[in-house]
Length: 207
Ligand SMILES: [Zn+2]
Image 1 (cartoon, rainbow, N blue to C red):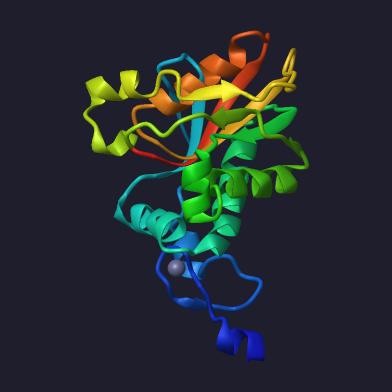
Image 2 (image 1 turned 90 degrees about the horizontal axis):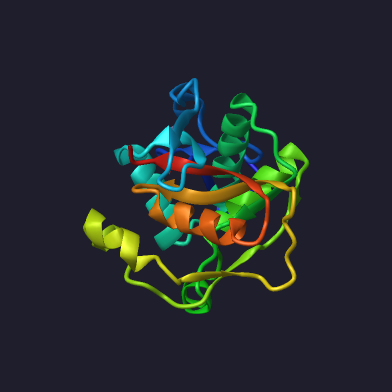
């Protein structure tokens, strides 16, 4: 065991068992990964590919990643999602992600979806670009009932000024898809002045 491993032990994101440096998850969790990606259509009509169902194990892993500072878990999520995207035979020119507001980004220190998206882009050898800004914090979607979620998201995102997506095939990344309203709104904004083909991809799907 190296000194690095002694002082900064690596843990499996899904079960917290200690793993060797260079590994992203333990063998047992890896053997239980879904064999095929989940594909659904979100309200905007775009397709969304997900690597996992949002069960208790994945919920806990994502919660540690987002709320308990386990930043390094992005590597496993990025790799698993890259695999799901490759298996779905999606063709994309570039990768982008759902942004956080400045305030939320400052609080968390990182955009969880961006880290996953950048890792996935690296693995699939695609360009990564920021395309959207979250201009204000809405109420958190998961705290609201489904009828209100669709309205809560309107006007929250805007495109980055200079971004030109004309004719591009874009892969839009988020950590979780539930109702699909957040991703749908991002697709709507990105498609507003562009003839753009967007596919969404998330680590987990709640449906
Ligand atoms: Zn494990």
